Image (cartoon, rainbow, N blue to C red):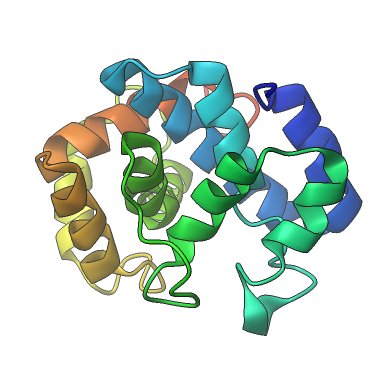
Amino acid sequence: MSTLSLEKAKEILAKHTTEEHLFTHAAAVSAAMEAMAGHFGGDPGHWAAIGWLHDVDYEKYPEEHCRHVRELLAPEGVDEEDIVSIISHGYGLVTDEKEPTTDMEKSLFAVDELTGIVHAYALMRPEGMKGMEVKSLKKKFKDKRFAAKCDRELIQKGVEGLGLDLGVVMELCVQGMQAHEAELNLGKD
């Protein structure tokens, strides 16, 4: 059993995805997952790889998201455990195959949508990710018109599943994305 690396995850995603916004989302979720791994004592590289690949089937099968993950990843030698972890982020939304139960799975479920709000907020700030505070982010989170497509209830459900405060998860998301702000094109001077 080999651990999925971020390098391998990037190679695999590039075979199934062409849309730039999906790569940006993959990078954001990967960055957040890396920070979540640090919080939970997980392997940051492995968690980042899972985050990078979480939407591997989305571009080809948007109406059947998470239902084609196995057929795309198994031939690449991705462990069944990792495949199931990726599928779990769609639990109750697009699949009922696997409920998120591990810290990694619950983290992926929680940060998937949250990274969208952080990203949208960074884009509107003159300083991008630099100096972003949870207090300000929470105000944007409460404004349902801001990043309206990001499902707040889903984020809350994910955060509750982790047993953490929303502010803690937001802080980790921000820290992870700040560490990768250049890759996300969110580093402004």
